[in-house]
Length: 302
Ligand SMILES: NC(=O)c1ccc[n+]([C@@H]2O[C@H](COP(=O)([O-])OP(=O)(O)OC[C@H]3O[C@@H](n4cnc5c(N)ncnc54)[C@H](O)[C@@H]3O)[C@@H](O)[C@H]2O)c1
Image 1: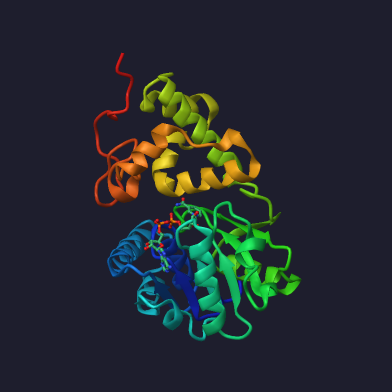
Image 2 (image 1 turned 120 degrees about the horizontal axis):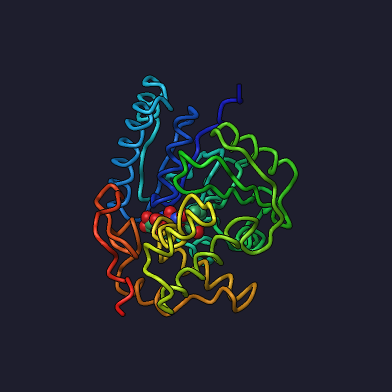
């Protein structure tokens, strides 16, 4: 039996990841404040969390009473300061941009409880740099969840240069209360997961650009031939092609040119084809993120 999750928990950013982190926090019994500057994102996050709770109950993963209680534990606001007031744990899940994360961390520190853990869900960026602007950076840490958060078992814990041992232990206890297994990773770009995932995804995109095979055949080859549960192109659509583009740019600047994103990736993002969350990326999706039938329009044209 894991210990209860200490609340209030504030999740800043109500996109693909923020809504999942809010879900697991509420299921773990904490009061959750979900924050986003975009009110529309908050509305759709609450709808999706409700549907995910229903699905969790149907699949026998969540007790009906736990799901009902979780619904009542989540509130929303468009003000980061208001959402962070008195929080014991803040998990930042905004866009993968250093300047935006710095702003959120400054506001979180000014408003959260004096002993709050301030965590970032960044996929790849330096924890040391993200928490570097805090008055007390020893409370900052990386808590890297995976998509979709309710289903994925791992939370990578990343120790910034200034992170205290007590903060690491509290972040670990929080992740475990959310039902996650943890690994501890040093603060190097891309950690132990995104570094590999981004490289494989980028190579898949490069193969598509070179016309090696259709998107469906590249994904099928990797799933059936290499035993990956998802192909690299469908994984890119799941992550979000815009988020992946930001991750690749950062990894190219920090780890080397092998991570430099393709022109195809840049063009898809410029066209608003962001993957599941926008309904169209490499493939097409319905409003619930379900894949629509029919071949990708990026197939070989030869
Ligand atoms: N998508 C993934 O598979 C995945 C997996 C692990 C980690 N991450 C990381 O999680 C973070 C969020 O990614 P995502 O996929 O959920 O992105 P997303 O684009 O789905 O959502 C980001 C949200 O942040 C909001 N936002 C932007 N600026 C804000 C601000 N100043 N204050 C409050 N909200 C703000 C946006 O309105 C948007 O709703 C990124 O750092 C990303 O690298 C993503």
